[in-house]
Length: 199
Image (cartoon, rainbow, N blue to C red; front, side):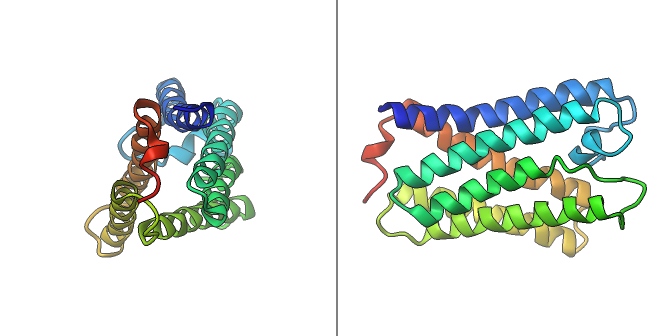
């Protein structure tokens, strides 16, 4: 395993680990936050205790790690557009540090937050789609991307159909995104991924 593969895997895995630790710490410190029913963004919302620190570590730091992971992973797969799409998702995640105003959903900062989240997920989904149909990539990489894309889409469709609430959709989307990132990162750290990238 080369240094590039190792650094890519470490950055992706670190993004997940840091988010979980930050979520547990700041979620526990905020008595008004519910781990099941509240949006994660509430921890960084206007007027919430420790919001600036949650935004700094939970969104900016994690987003920068995702940016680095996406850029290096796409480059490793010899796909410049994929590198751009995945890194833009990371940048978008970092920019969700723009705090929502939970009391005013129509406030400019709230609209900006929602728009950035939506745009970031679109970049990530396009990246998955690009991997999914790239015949040069191994079957494992393509299947992983396609499964993640289907699960992400199903999570959103479930909300539209009224099968579950938006907070549940929120958790599902986070689970899919960081689940894919974690599995991909562990693959890079535990085997010679460079031999598996191309068919």
